[in-house]
Image 1 (cartoon, rainbow, N blue to C red):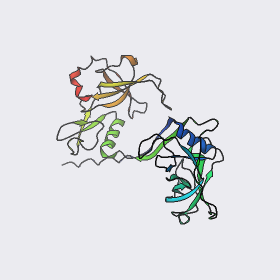
Image 2: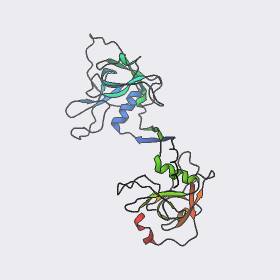
Image 3: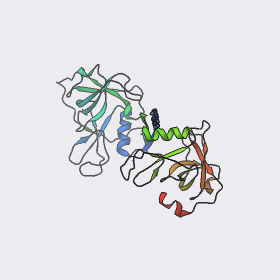
Image 4: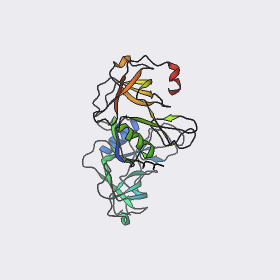
Length: 323
C-alpha cells in the first residue's frame, strides 16, 4: 500500500484590479462638481420640498426630473460615523480618521466624507463640523479635503438653502474616477493543482463523479451536481475555437498590437471552454471550429496564446454544446 501524495501548498498572491471610469455629467452633477471647485455646495430640491445633497437628477420618490438647484451651508452635523484606524492608498487622509455622514445645514440628506479628528473619542453623532476645502480644486468630490470639528455659534441662525442658477465659468463636463481593488487571492486546492500543472506544461481538470463533466480550470465542486470533483483528468493540449471576438482597443500596459482575437477554446477532453488569445493567423481568418494548440510563455508557466494546428476545422456538432 502506497502513501497518498501530500496536497500541494496552497498558493497566495496579491492582486490589483484597477481601471479608470470615465463618465459625462448632466446639468445637475456638472453644477454640483463645478460648485465644489468654487467652494459652493449645491443641492437639488425635490417635488416634496426636500433638499438632496449630493444632488440627483430624478426624484427618488416620484422619479420626476429635478432641476431646482439650491446652495446649502458648508457646515453641518454628523449623523453617523465609523473610525478608520488604518487608511489605505487613495483615501482622503493618510492618518487615522472617521468616515462620517454629514447633513449639511439646509440639506435633508447626508453626505459621506472623511472627518479629521485626533481619535474616535473626539467623534460623536451630533458633532458640528465644517468643510475643509482642498488647496487646489478641479471639480471633484476631493475638492472637499475633509470635514473638521468646529465650535458652533448658537447665536447665528440656521442658514436656509438659497436658490442658485448652477451657472459657473468653465463648467466641469465630465470626470475620470479611478477604480482600484487590492486583495490577496488564494486559489484553493483545485486551482492550486491546476496552476502547478500549467507550470509543467500540462492542463489538468477535474471530473464530476456524478455527471462526468470535466471542468477546466477546476472548481473543486460540480456547480450542477453540487458534489466534490476529486478525479484529476489531463486534457488538451489541443482544442477548438468555439466563439471569439476581435479586440480593437489597446489595453493599458498590454504589449499586444490591435486588432487581435480573444476566443473561447474547448480543449480536447474538457467539458467547457476556457478563454485565450489567438495568434499566428490573421485576425480576420479566425473562425469557429478552428483547431488550435498552446504556445507557452517564455517562463513556461502558462499558455501565452494559441495558434492554429493545421488540422481540418472541427465539425460543429463536436463543440455546439460548449458555445
